[in-house]
Image (cartoon, rainbow, N blue to C red):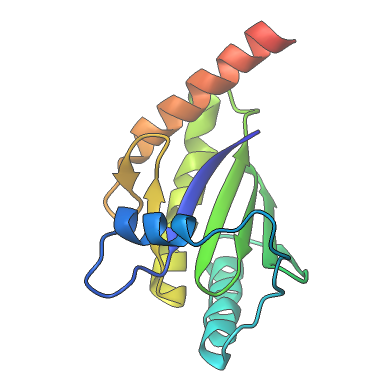
Length: 157
């Protein structure tokens, strides 16, 4: 289980929630997954994003899978994973940063999340704390991550 931040290509004249609802209503759990089919623009956005993160934040590793492109960041702030398929992305942060130890990784995740918005044309939303990535309060998100991580460590170990 991880802390998730979601990104979508919001449909014209729709909100983030309306777009998510439309995507979810079309979901068929019995259908075969379709491999990603990135447009040239999607691929260029991903390439710009990877280069920018590497330049402005630090080294990353990337892999291409049939259903997504994946970027992993292991730095002094911690670890997270970004998955991208052209029309959506997620940042997943493990619950291993209790208390104030969550602030550095969450600040980095939001910083990179804003880069995802700028380079890939997606809009980010953090449902854990009900706030958009672009204007969200990193400390509120870090408090949530840190509190859940502390609870998990105290209760589940």
